[in-house]
Image (cartoon, rainbow, N blue to C red):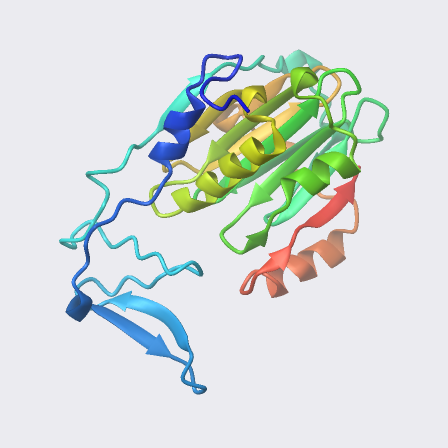
Length: 256
């Protein structure tokens, strides 16, 4: 399986390298390993900067700490291209919003063919679109998201890498392991060559809107906050958002 370059000229293997964890050779005495009441190993904490580990046991450290990786890491990886959505084409009444830890599906025949999400800083926004059927998946992924891209592609009939465009934005140096997981899953699906545009580890609050009918996209400052509205299952989604974000869970799938 070829994984080195995508059709847009993106070096995929370099992306995998740049999103891999860097070994900072932490001294044992500088790391506190906390245990729960059943004496099982729990989260870790740096004794110098007090930064706590994520669910995978990674400690990223504050920039003032001697173990800070920020100077070693690759930041603001941006490559590829996308077609910008013309505001004159944009119909806010045909646009729906994806919230954190949700995945939305739409296409040209659905009631809401335009979908988007916002506020992804440590989170990642992933878009997968079939150029023939216009079937489009949009994810808002955080560190506790139980993600299975291959299963989703099969379920929503996105099966041909040569007819698929993929876009990935968001994340920063504290969440690059999420990006690495997404990129690895795309390789395992055989869709690494479908990556058309990437803009990650940029420390921004990222936003994206895509029109599934055309594949045209709005990014960041072009996404006015008034464009984002929630009409479908609003109260249930609000309840889930407020009560399920503190522990690992599957995505909430919404068909628009």
